[in-house]
Amino acid sequence: MKMYTRNLLAVLAITLLFTACASEKQLEEITQQSEEEETTNWEESTHPEEPVVALPGLPDDVAGYTQWLKLNAEPIPPQGGGDPHNGTKNVYVNQTRDTIAPNGTQQFPYPDGSIVVKDATRPGKDYIGLIAIMRKKAGTNPDHNDWEFTEYLRDAPDAEFSLKFQGRICWGCHAQVEDIDYVFTELE
Picture 1 (cartoon, rainbow, N blue to C red):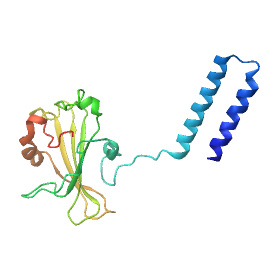
Picture 2: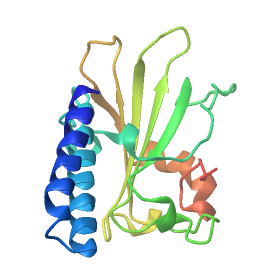
Picture 3: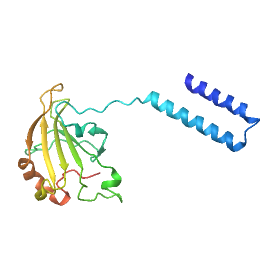
C-alpha cells in the first residue's frame, strides 16, 4: 500500500508540474502511462511467475496441466464395476474453450496437437496417484483418430510416476466413445 501511495503522489506531482506547460491531451497520456506502469508493477510484485515443472516421472509436455481448460465442472467420483481409472478424477485439455466449443457447444474431433490429461486420487489416498494422457498427433494412429494413449501410476505422494499402460489396452475401452473423439469426459 505504501508503494501505491508513493506512486500516486509521484503521478500527482508530475501532473502539477506539467499543468502549466502541457496540453490536456499530454496530461491525459502521462497520467494513463503512469497508471499502466503502476498496475504492471503491482501485478509483477504480487504474482511472481513460478516455473512450470512436470510432476516427477511425467513428460514435460504436461507440465502445468492443472492450469489448462478443465472439462468437468465437479470432480468425477469413482465408478463401480471395474473403473480402470479408479479414483476421484479431473480432466484437462491444452485447448481453449473457444477452440473446442466455438459456439458454446463442444465440437469434435479435437484439433491436432490436443493433449488431454486425466488425474485421479485413489480411494483412501490424498495425492494424485494416476495420470492418463491422450495426445492427438496427425498420422500416428489413424484407426483411433490419431490419439496416442499412456497411463502413469505412483504409490506415494513423493514417488515418481512410472509408465504402466499404453496403446491397445487403452483403445479397447475408449472405442466406446468413438463418436465423441475417444474422450469420455465432455466439456461442461
